[in-house]
Image (cartoon, rainbow, N blue to C red):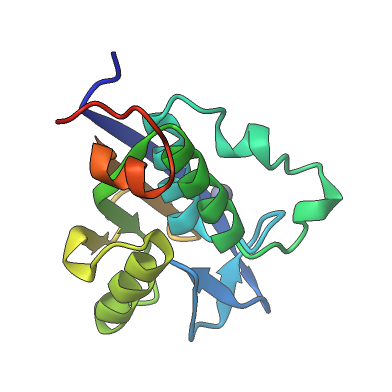
Length: 174
Ligand SMILES: [Zn+2]
């Protein structure tokens, strides 16, 4: 029998590079440097994607979207998150909430936190109050030129009524 709830965890890091846009949480933040990588380098969406995939024991982001595949060159990472969300739903689960921590020296995330939470909530199709986002500076870690993201996600089994609404027969009452 499927567990009622499942937890997922994801982690990612990317190096800052001059002259490219800084993409975080599916948004472009004003900053002289962006995060390098094969895709758009969105460290937060990558950590969230891996958390969703891990929660349903699916292959990780690097396996599904190989950095050596030209299809993902410069790709919008929202696409990766969308695929992970699809796999969560196909497995019979819905996202309850997510919580993420960004670790970076600059720029300050505070002024963008509300917009980021709202945008990530929109991508995950949950309410912004179910998206936790903290930002820390990497004190004493010697990682000023990198951004790191950690994310956890909680899933719950899709209620039978919802499954029925999607046309799945023989769902037993809760
Ligand atoms: Zn990444």
